[in-house]
Structure formats: structure tokens, C-alpha cells
Length: 382
Image 1 (cartoon, helix red, strand yellow):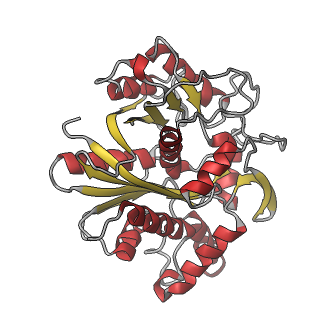
Image 2 (image 1 turned 90 degrees about the vertical axis):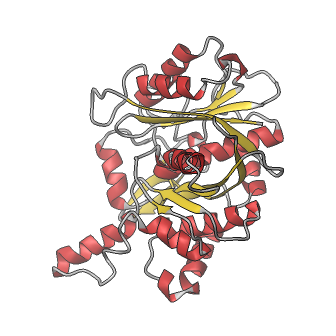
């Protein structure tokens, strides 16, 4: 790292809640937030926002005539971004915004497409409200930021790629502060149908429908969740920093299948080694794994960790609790890592029998990867 990059705040809006206290309280509970819910005409296992948070979304939608036609993915992003900037104490508007999404405005897109199939016409705002770039631009509008605005989709590693972009802009000298993150509202009939078609969606409605990090499972158990998470980045040593980014890595697999990574997740091996260039791997205390709950996804990432580390750090994930939030998942994982550092407590996966030693938590690696084998690894330090 040329110059230390501080994470001065992190905020989320998800099934875990919206405040750091709510989120941490949920992580201390060994119960999953995944439930059966009617999505369209069928019932599916999902991790959805609480009724209280959904009311906040509708209040935001009604607060401004311009917001009435926006997709939930944009509204979740606005709510999380407002809180992140507030917590960071940013008073001026001189910061950049990079917020991505894997699916974008999928609910609105499905709605407009159905209308088109029935009538041959679309609503006036069908195009501007379903373009992927409208997440970052609406957040920038809402916060009145004057810096660059970027949106992108790099499937499930989208949020951590946003963080990489923020680092690049700041290290280039083109910005001193960046708001980065991801937002996803994928609990729609078509999106869930796509996951079912891939045969990776969980069918088990027991206490833990998603068995992420269970390396002995014989069935795929991925479940979808929704929400947004944002982080405020600043250059240099900052008094109120929650943690520092001390390493980053990225890589893309040589694909053997259009949706799958290699058996030993070579992309993760490369991204983790790149992120660990300035630290002894034995100093990494924990890894928040991507671990989507699929047989191959979980095992291949674990094999990559075995190839990278002589002594395996403590391993965890949050997908057993909140499902897979696609483009937002990497920042929700980063939030978990920061909370573990701040509270000096490791959050275990309740059905994993391996016990982790009590130790000081100073360095945590966060992993994310998406369709196409595009891995990102971020090292954060106390």
C-alpha cells in the first residue's frame, strides 16, 4: 500500500438491521434469518428485510416525487449511504461514489417487461430507472456529492470491486475520499427461478437452510438475501478509523464452466497471495469466506485457503445467516470483519464443530468471488 487507507465508517441496511448495534446483536445470535416467503406465486427460502425496515423504504419512496419510480436496490443504497456518510462525519461534498449491483433494478425490470409483453409498450421511465448506473447516480444526487460517480456489475464480487476502484482513485491522487459499496434487491420470481435452474438453491427448510462452510454437505444450499452495505474510505492515518486496508488482491480464473470456479479456486489463491504481500500469512487471524453454500463453491475456496496458508486462520461466513446478497455480499462480509475487530470476538458458524481459539483479532482477510471466477481479497487491520 502506497499510503494507508482508512475505513472511517461502515453502514448497512439488511435483514441484520440498520445500526451497528442491531447488526452485532444479530451476529451474536446463533439463529438464521432465512425464512419461507411468498415470492410471486411460489414460496421460497429467502433472507428478507424486516417489516420495520420495509416501512422505512416506503417512507423514503414517498418522501420525494423523484423517488417514487426507483427500484428497491436504489432505495436500499440511499438509506445505507446516508448512514455511512453521517457516521464518517463528512460535512462537505468532495467525495466519490462507487456503488455496484449484480442484478440492479431486477424487480422493476421484470415489472416493465411484463407490461411490454402484455401491451407492447413500456412506461416512460422504464429505461432510466433500470440502468445499472442509476444506483450510484441517485446516491450521489441524494448526498449532493461532487466527486466521480461509478456503477458496475462484476457479479457477486461487485462490492469489493467497488472498494478496489475507490483505492485506485485515491492512490492516483484524483480523490481523497470515496463512498464504496453494493446494493441488491434480488428477491423476485425471475431471479429465484434462475438460481433454481442452476440447481444450487436450498430446498431444506430446517434451522439452517444455508449450510455455508459445511464441507460435508451433499446438496447445494445457496439462499438469496437482500440489502445494501457502504463504507467510507479516506487517505492516510485517520483518528476515527475503524480499521485500515493493508492489502488487496484480485484475480480471474481460467474457467472450466461458465458459472463455476476451478476445483482449487486458483483465482482465490492468486487474490489472497496478492493481498498478503506485506504481511506474514501466519499473522492473519481470521478469514471471512465468500462461501455461498454450494458444494463446489465452499470446498474450492477452502482448498485455496489450504494452498495459501501453512496455518489455517479462523474461518467464518455470514451466508448461513443472511443468505447470499450477490453484489452487496462483499461489503456485508467486510462489515462483519470490522465488527469482529472492534468487539474482539470471533463469530463462529453454529453448525461447524471445529472450535476456534480465543485470540486477539488484528488482521482479517475478506473474500468474494462471482460468476466468471472474478475473485477479490481485502486485508483489513486493527
